[in-house]
Image 1 (cartoon, rainbow, N blue to C red):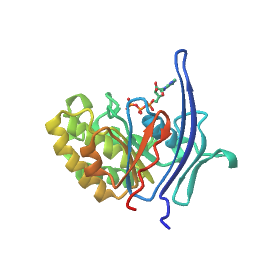
Image 2 (cartoon, rainbow, N blue to C red):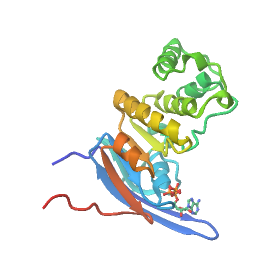
Image 3 (cartoon, rainbow, N blue to C red):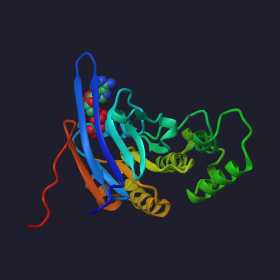
Length: 229
Ligand SMILES: Nc1ncnc2c1ncn2[C@@H]1O[C@H](COP(=O)(O)OP(=O)(O)OP(=O)(O)O)[C@@H](O)[C@H]1O
């Protein structure tokens, strides 16, 4: 039997004036890198946000290996900050008024306090690892799409997360850059070895970045086709 690295059973109800969306996503994955697929509005981003602890009222459970992040039946609901999850948003969501270095520092350190040498050393290591050392003092508006992607990844990985969530990490890029950065991202994910759940629409991303897939449609997981006879 394969052990589930990630075990998710999430119930989320989203209501606005015009819409009522019910997510009931149940899946497990043994893979280090899993892609979440499905049409627009299927609930993919909602799954990532709920796994990260960013959807108030989400019910069910989220387990990562032996660690329970959410188990509403058992009264466990770790706040987002305690889940130790790195999140790369679709548009990267870098802080425009902070330098590259400050953006990466953000998740590791309380603003205003003196930065301990070990933290500065970790930032230096990430800047080198992501080939950003020459851009440490640059602001996001001066970065290319690929550089922004690397800053977003470095920021997500800085606090040594136990899980990395990537919401369409290549969709903000043009086709040429996307092809190059897909290969770079695949190589980086292989190197950092953090379990990863990524949302994408692109079969090329699945092929290059994921070892297994989960398909969502209208808030539900589509049962996998049986393999072999
Ligand atoms: N705050 C909200 N209130 C009501 N409905 C919402 C809210 N947020 C999202 N939704 C709805 O939930 C559904 C799932 O949205 P979600 O962003 O998770 O889909 P998605 O699969 O990531 O789509 P896309 O590929 O277009 O990004 C959509 O129908 C959306 O309109």
